[in-house]
Image 1 (cartoon, helix red, strand yellow):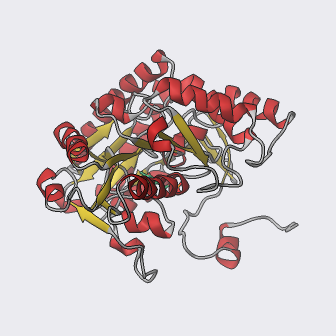
Image 2 (image 1 turned 180 degrees about the vertical axis):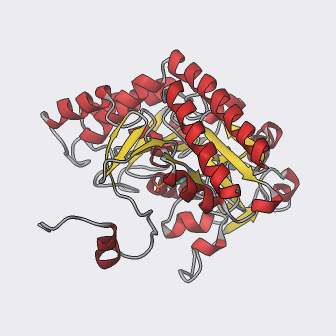
Length: 404
Ligand SMILES: *Cc1c(COP(=O)(O)O)cnc(C)c1O
């Protein structure tokens, strides 16, 4: 093992250069606070990119992990296990779903969903019905199929040939979908109810309802990618419940494990039939340790007081960011839902989102970006209100310096 002190420089020597991580290395977290190697403290509004939904070192998650670790970690899918079955039952009880497939990441859950919609159409309607409609600006993961369905061409550049039969419509523009959809060819519409990476852009309720109707008219399946918007983030267990539009397939990851890698694809019993024995699989999917942790996450965040608390925290954070935005002329609006917020930069600050992230780090607050024009916030769903106030104070200092 490498015995010398670990530094940020080591990253450039041993890691594939596909990331550009910040200059500090965090070593410890508790609640919504993080400390780096030098002992500097940060208020965490990144939440591991909408993952650490109960903050860091949550006692309930620690004991769930510890208890399961002493029983059994892993079996593969040659055997089933108690934590996976319990978690699947909970997810069915809490949502429209009747069947669950477990995976390890959002991209994998989506890969399963995209394979399922093809397979379902192939079985029920024939091989011609294989086209997927998705949206510009969408993000669905980094496997070849998921970047192809995603709507950010730069993520596909140099990796072609891409899987075919995928068309991109304009988000929040039902007419653009109508131009692409057909009963003969379209097998599914795939959408994030709130586009996350694409700039924290909420779907219009009428748009999402319209997609449901179009799917029904054209015998196509509706897939909601709730990898980012799910697991309590909006103050609802899943955003589809907020919109009152029920998909046929829903994918969940990020917050689902609260920091432990786990993902799920939820669907109905009827649709699930198309993934019969041997059609799809995953070695780690349904891992006992992962499911035990996710169970604790689900049990905790599904409590009404936690979900209500998201609303109160959202209002406080939203108002604080709007105040800063107005005072310094940096934000034109704060959009999103619950604790997935996007602060949209004004004309003058276009392209500068990363500067806000870096300025925040200098003042001890961690924020995210979503593209070059949006400062994104996705903190713990149980972040103490005093931490929100502290974060706002630190962020204001950062903005003051940046705009001076
Ligand atoms: C993060 C994200 C993904 C990809 O998840 P991974 O765990 O990184 O594979 C897919 N869809 C959405 C909406 C996401 O935000």
